[in-house]
Length: 129
Image (cartoon, rainbow, N blue to C red; front, side):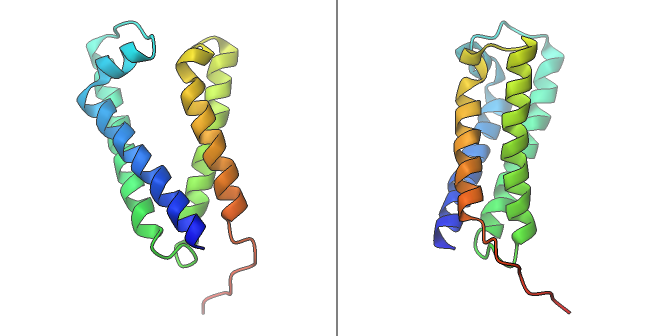
């Protein structure tokens, strides 16, 4: 369980940091990834995305204190990283982004998907009454 706690906290902290970057410096983050300057309204969507990342990260850190009791949040984290991998692959295959632009997220999310799945407590949890 300790490994799962650590993995959840590390991933959640990375999400919080990324969310802050998306809110505070969307243009700089985009230019580092090779994106062209986007219309101003895109920054609004990025700020909302950043808020979601921060809130999710905070709740995952709270849930990581007792992963068995908060198993739904662990499942959320696993589902999210798997869907992020799928979303990045889809965007690359459709030509929306290049591997250079989405590769870091693809690699990190793939790594955390494997780690979280490996550390997940697969034994059936007792039912609460």
